[in-house]
Length: 437
Image (tube, rainbow, N blue to C red):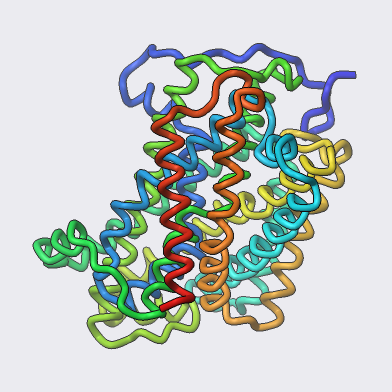
């Protein structure tokens, strides 16, 4: 029987059309955008916004240089994960299963689910606080509305529709770039702090650096990136693993463009969020942030209603973009380790366990909000935890991506392996320094 669509009708199998170079350059670039841009934009979720806001408020422009450093590192990692999905025909956890013992991977799955669920809860709280600020309606009401809407939309719509919505939602992030430019910084000072690294001199500083790395190079994005490569191919007709194995030079080049743009966009937004809060909150001695709403309210008298509004709207848009990614990445990991039928393109009746994990993560996030857990602190320390756990996961990814058998004869390039190796070493070093200093 042919696979069911989200509406329950049999779907016609089609062969995937390879990327072409037809049309104008704008159309070609836009056509190449997909999983890479979605992953990059999802990286700037309310968790990232909170972490970058805390960084700018507490340390001013001291950590602006990290945006330039994390861009190539993030790009290398995301491209390696994309390549695993493209050439192996499987998601990341399914590929790691062929190299590592199942108990070890189960621990990683549960850790991923726990971290992502805390993140989902904090993201829902950040979105709800922003919505309450705009509407006056209690934030608990908005948490339930956002949770039900996001869960329903992710389960109800097909992958192509979900991916299209997420790609357009990424545009809300430009609000943070506009906000910083609107405030009017001293660009000479900004350029200096961007090009001349200033290393932390305290445990709090090292913890902040680890948090930046953890929220920029996040474990959930590794799983999401590789699984979306599989979804892209399934949506274009390649339903069997054997049909998905291997990738053409053009396909890999297209994805490199996609990942490069997505990660550049992500780090550009990170740069301007740090800059905005450094120019406003840090300059006026406001460093103890409790909620995302507090950040938005503090921006109002310091930078004007326009800046506060952009910050607030951005929180809602990025949360809607990131929550399906967070909950979905854990669902993909569990489905691949237990062999469940999976995918946002699957009808819920045929992938009940997959959607149950996704819905459970969102539901648990709602409960965390009603438990009145401080969302900014939860987001910040989740980023720190991810920063500690990510290098261990990156080690496994590096081993899998170097294995010709797993990679169907197309292992990652030597340059890619070196870049991810440097990223892994840097994240290990930062985590150790945080505990030692």
